[in-house]
Length: 169
Image 1: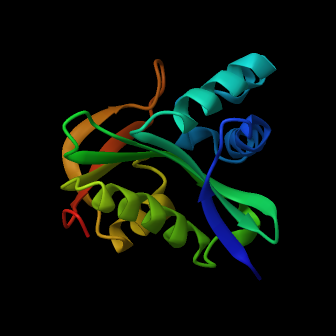
Image 2 (image 1 turned 60 degrees about the horizontal axis):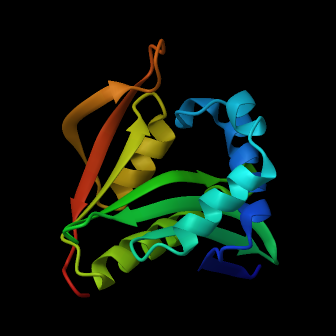
């Protein structure tokens, strides 16, 4: 099993789109957008999203590939003050969960933030997704008091989790 974690380049929008749509189909309550909304986007939309993020100095789209096939994804960005790295849109394919791929992907995001001298990592997680909450807690994240509805009209709640980072590590 060969796992490779990397950021996407501007022209790799199909890889992000395919993982994103698969994630929304598998875990709709983990994401704010709905599958039908994301499926309706044009190729140009996906190309723009991936291109603008790949070209941004404080943003990345990450994928984990197993034997050359995309099996996990995450988004990251750093605030303008370089104090906080945000992780989001994280998803790991069901067939590779509990293999360490998710931890390695999250670790890459956190390390990137730490190398960029941020002090803190933050993310949002659906409270009802106890497996995801436990996963993030096992990587040093703790609950904050910040909560929101997952999306308008939803009874599901997302909570911000955070952890300190060692600057410049």
